[in-house]
Structures are given as structure tokens and as C-alpha cells.
Image (tube, rainbow over the protein chains, first blue to last red):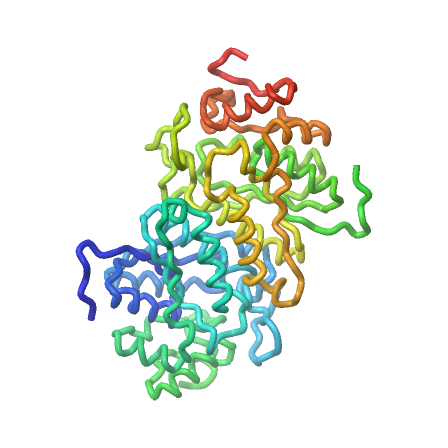
Length: 232
Length: 232
């Protein structure tokens, strides 16, 4: 796919183990970047997604690092606080699965890593179309983070420019899946469900499962996900 | 000093164990805030500063939390990488003691914590006068972070406004020490040195020691620091 430059430019890629970031990684590689992936262990309900991220990075020859992040200890989200139930129906406003300032914390780490690597490019698979209504997935947030990042660091002071790439931000879930399929993403190695069961089967009914299932249906591509509740 | 509101507003205060953040905590309390302090264990050369921060918070009745942060593992700074020497003379440009994106990472955590606490105020003791030339201490960085923070979170979406307070940003070290003294900061319970010895004595010659010593001299206040190299 890509004609690699010599030496290839480095990029930091946030890799969650989900569908979107897997697609983002392959897009970054297709642009010729040598990719340094970061996954976060932040007290999320299941850690299988981190194993998926590690396997995916390995499969595609990308560097991979897992960072333990202590935001789960602050509480305040159904994704990290076992006292809050994951909802199974859409509700107005910001959902309880929102993790306070999660993308800010993740991008801050990516920025620190980029500075050390002397990388000028960070990729994040946020999406503002088929998403869960999180404030830190909006284009205005990403633009503000990029502005801040260039003021925060040696990079900006020395006259270079760091770019936050969001190749999925304006794509429908269907378009993401089609693009990823074309690049060779194995979606069986990605997980979207907020509440996998102990055998790793997706619930099929949480917000994230519903968006994923609809995306595959509309893309006309078979969903390789093993769902517990809907018998597929 | 302060007439406390009922109930007092909550603020997150970044507390490093150093002189500046100790002064900042007492300034926030003097403004009537109920303070939730955050200290970070990020692989810095000595951990004594975290113990000082905990003791100071306790002394002043503030809540205190220590968060382990994995940026030291990225390397790239003399403060976290034992392979890089701490310099003892001024040099042009950004010094090797700069920790990549440190204040961005710390403020990102403060933002997450503020969201969970429903606090609209974060205090950070950055200073753009007598400082070490770090890019993430500049007013433009703080302003950009505040803009980003309001786009990143539930706070901004719901029409409130989060403020990053930097009460020290335009003060000389001398003025900071005088203000802190007036508020009752016990500077014996703060540490500035980048390379304390095993008995906790400051080196007296690193960038941070030199700025501290000069500040006390100019303020006409006795420096309670125990220095190893200069016999005081």
C-alpha cells in the first residue's frame, strides 16, 4: 500500500483494541509512518481490549506500549466504576459511559511520548458521526488540543509543528469499516463492547455494540463479533 | 484570612512538594476554596517531595491524592532518566531537566479529577518570571489548556466554565516567598532541589536551588533549606 520513506517518519498512534483505532493504525501505516502505539490500562471493565491491541500491533509490525493510567480511581464513569450500570438504551445528553477527560489524558501521554520520540504526528481514531456523544470526540476539542500541544512543548518552541491526525472524524461507521477492510484490518481482532462476558462475548445491546452492528450491516460486511445476547 | 462560603467551592490544586505549589495551596484556601490536592509520582529522582506534599496538605486540612504517572518510562529528561546529568550551570534554551509534556499530563489528570468532583477551578503554581525556561510554564500555554479543557469536558458542554488559576505566574520568586510567608507557609516543609542527597539535603547548585536561594535572599527571609554543598 505505502511507499515508505527512508527513514520513515515516526507517529504515535492511540490504540484501544477497538474497531476505530485498529483502522486508524492501518491508515497511518498506509501513509508511510513508522507507528508507535500506546494503549492504556485505566481500570476499564475488561482488559481483553488491551490484549487485542497488543496482538494487532504485533500482527502489523508496529511498536506497542501499555501505560497504566490512574483515572479510574477518580470514579465518575460506568466504564470504570462498577457501581454504575452500563446503559442498554439511548438516552439524551452525555452518557454515563463517558470517562472524565479520558481523551485529554490519553493525548497528553501521546504528546509526552511524541516529544521523546521526536515525532511530529499523533493519530487518534475519534469519530464525530457514529459516536456516543462524548465531548472529547468533537473536532473543536481536537483543534484546541493541537494548539495547546504546540505551546506546551519543545516542538513548538523550536519552530516545528505537531499535528493531531483524526482520519476517521468525519466518516460514518460504515465508511470506517469499508476503509479498514480495504486496508486489511482483521475486525475479529477488535472489540467494541462495554461489557464483555467472562468468555469474551459481546453483549450486543450496549451503545457501542449497537453502533458497531449497524455499521457492519450498512457496510454489507459480515460482523465477525461473537455476541452473547442476540444469538449470532 | 478567608470567609468561607457555605458550602465552599471545590478546587483541584497541583501540589508538588515545592515552594511554589505550597504557596499556591494557601492562596487557594485564602480565596475560600475547599482544596483537593494532587501529587504525582512520575519516576522523579527523589520521592521526598511527595512526602512533603502529603505533610503540607495534612497540616492545612486539605484533601490529598497521589497519582502514579508513567511518563518517566518514556525517558528524555534529566529529572527522570538517570543516564542524563542534572546541570549545575545555566545554559541557553530549554534545559535537560524539562520533562516532556509534564504540565500537560498533570493538568489533564487535574481536569479529570475536577470533573468527578464537580469542581470548576484548578490551581497550578507555574511561574513565568523566575523559572527554568520550560515551555509549559508560559501564560499562552495555560490559556490554551483552559480553552481545550472547556471543550473536552461535560463542564463546557453544560454551559459552565472551568478556570485554570495561576496566581504565581507573574510574580518574582521573592514576591512568591513574601506572599507565602504572610499566609503562613512553612517553607521548611518544601523542597526545590533536583538532586537531594540521601539525607535529604539540597545540592545548592542546580538551577532550582539557585533560583530558590536567590529568592530568599532578595525577600530578606531566612532560607530554611538544608544545603549540602554550601555549608549553610
